[in-house]
Image (tube, rainbow, N blue to C red; front, top):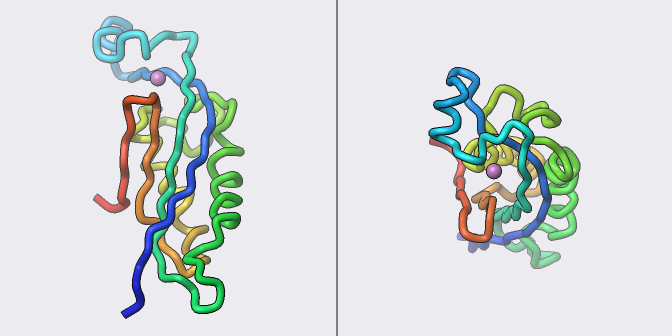
Amino acid sequence: MEKKVYITRRARFNAAHKLWNPRWDEQKNQEIFGKCSNHNWHGHNYELHVTVKGSPNIDTGYCMDMKDLSDIIKEFIEEPLDHKNLNLDVPWMHGKLASTENLVIEIWNQLEDPILNYDCELHAIRLYETENNYVDYYGGQ
Ligand code: NI
């Protein structure tokens, strides 16, 4: 049996959003989301941890070259999200509430296939919205 290891790459981006449910009126949005529902947006410095699972390659000793993982995260996550408005600028967030929970699921969907090209699989995504709040996702249900 090949031993599996888990490697993690960190990335950072900042982005604007608001939490707003179009099915609710102003008052209900205020009540549920508080200042996060501010019409004129607010921003976060997000921190993303992408963990990939695989076996060390016999020739390189790598599960996946960190440079390749870093390039994938740049192309599929940092470029589309950094300095953007999550509600308006990101096609794969359209029509979704821009919570950390929803964002982490959509980030998984963006990264899963590109990582499969490397004899590795995506294991976990951790997304910090603030220093104190983060969401983990392991795929599936
Ligand atoms: Ni927010």
